[in-house]
Structure formats: structure tokens, C-alpha cells
Image (cartoon, rainbow, N blue to C red; front, side, top):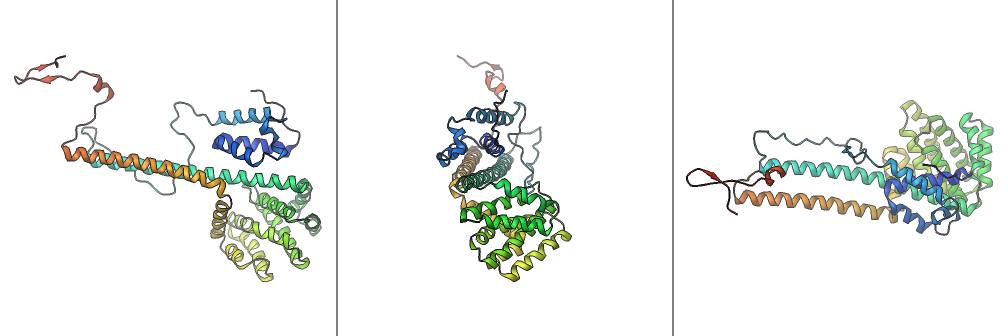
Length: 359
């Protein structure tokens, strides 16, 4: 497939490519949601037949193609191993038809497998939906503030590479000079969060940018810059907890020293400090807060999955009820295979001879 020319603006290209991935993975509902929320945003004009409409549609088609599986492949999606060990159904002897209890047990096992599959799939899609909503919020802030975030990235790189006092001071000064409104502060804090929490970030990057955060926090308190302090408090839990949980104890101690300083200086409220003191619990609470914050996106998806699981349970219950009715009626005759069902059954006469049934 020949791909139309992409936007020269790398940021816009990233937005188009990422949206194409999400729509291919999660369905057209994501595209509809984005069109509704971004109908007045010129950056998303490609969704409404704008300049890069052809490029977006081509990228979407390519992403969708990657999600088409070979007919012989039984796996619909690549699911990680379940968190709990499921007991396989007991083997059924080839010489005997399965009993009622064996059929019920196998149906129950199948239900467990399907529920596990749906729970995993739901978690993946909820995470993707929240990530897309967060990205859309950043694009909205970029449009509102007209802040050139690449300037910040150019100042962050020397901090990541060398972490000198001069490099940290330059980054801090830029942030203070551009902390012109709560929206400016939210955008800068969100950008720091994204740079630090991305899976590919190495420990030095995370640690050095946390050092920058520490310096900014100190000056926020000294200069009474409440908007920037509030914005950093909103992102400090994922920044700190992700960095702490990703490394061994020796490196964790370097981060813990900063937490002790933050607690001593009273940068954050008590609830935030408690989350930072227990990184695993804190990160879990943060992720739960995102589900609440983006409930408008998440709730319809959760409802759809609940309906799917309920439908599977109802199907299983009906199957079990049917088996028990047969059990009460008498011995269960094994179901005929399709090949057997096509054959004309024979009947035994009183004399013991086999004849075909009359027409």
C-alpha cells in the first residue's frame, strides 16, 4: 500500500499514527469519541476530510491489516498468562461417553477461561482508552497555551545526559518563566510525567528528571508558585512510584532520599505522602483515580464487558439446567455426531431382524 505523504510536523504525525493504532485495536467507537471531543480542534481536522485525511485513512487500514489473523490461528488476541492457575478439565475416557458431572465441569472450566480472556482484554482496552484521552488532553493544552514543548525537551536533554547544576537551573528557569496559567503548569507537569513513566525510560533519565522536579518544588514553595506546585502534586505519584518500582534496592535508596526531603519540607499533602511511602499501593491508587477521572470513556466499555460475561454465564447456566433435566428424565444418550445424524437409523423387529423404517 502506498502511503500518502505524512505531515512534516512530527507532533501532528505522532497524533495521527497513535490514533490510527487505537482505532484499529479498539474499534470505530474510539474514532467517534475523538471526533466528538475534537470537533473544534484544528489539529484533528484530518478526521473530517482535512489535509491529512488520506494519510490517516491509509495508516488506519495498515494498522487494521496487522490485526487480521490467519484463518488457522485459533488465538484471537495474544493474551498474557492468567494471574491464577486454572485447573484443566479432567480427561474424558475415549471408551465412554462423558457423564453429566464431567460435562458440567468442562463447561465451568470453559467459562473460567472465557472470563479470564475478557478480563484481560478489558484491562488492555481500558488502558488504551485512558492513554488516548490523556493524549487528547495534552493536545488540547498545547492548542490553548501555544507553548513550544520542544524548547523544554531541548533543556531536558542536558539534564538527562549530565545532570549538572547549570542544566537543572536552565530547565527550572524555563518552567518558571512559562508557568503563566494553570493550563501552562498542567502541560509542563504532564510532559514530565510522560517522559519519566514511559516504559523505555532508563533509570538515569528518571532520576535526573526527578532531581529537576525536586529543584522546581523547592522554588515553588519559596516563590509561592501554587499553580505549578499543584500541577506537580498531581503527577508526582506516578513519577516517583514508577521510578521506584522499576529498579533494585540500591537505586531505590537514591529516590527515597528525595521523598524524605519532600516530606520534611511539606511540599505535598498527607494523602500524597502516604501514597509515595508505599509505591505499589500508591501506583494502584493512581491508576484507579484515572478510571474515575476518565469515567465517561471507561464506563461504557466496562458495561459492554459485563454484558458479555453475563451472557456467557447465562449460556453456561442454561446448559447445566438442560443436562440436569436430562439426568432426571433418565440415562443420557451421547449426542450423535453430524455424520451419524445424517444416517437413516435402523429399527429392530420383534424377531430380532433389522429393517429400515417405513416411509
